Length: 160
Image 1 (cartoon, one colour):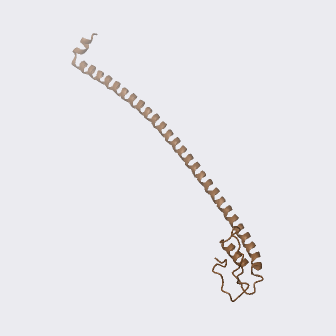
Image 2 (cartoon, helix red, strand yellow):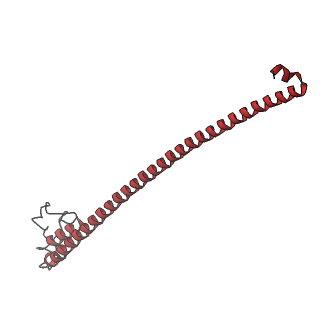
Image 3 (cartoon, helix red, strand yellow):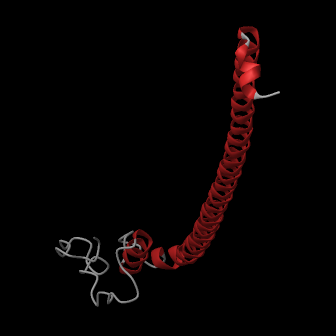
């Protein structure tokens, strides 16, 4: 049979036309399905890659943040330890100074019947207040307070 014979009958024409249309439709559907699957697979792969990169970036940021926090903690701990050591050293120096001054007070106040504030007392008092020190020369004269109780005191008798 020839194609012209097949197409000569109208019912056959319709059957061939519908068959051809069905073949084209199936071809289009197969092509669309293949494109959909390819697009889905490509998008899934790209999404998985982006998600993995995001998780890696988050893990890196978290690790860096943790390391910085640990560094800040260590630095703060070292500062606190140093401050505590400085505080304890200052307390020890003050205790030693207090002990030395306490030992000098009886000597500084002894031997002065007429005046309670002799030159040694004033020196120890100034030293205790931090006003005088080893570099400050002692007064040669107490202002006459020990020799003549009725005499007026000098303007600067060493008491600051």
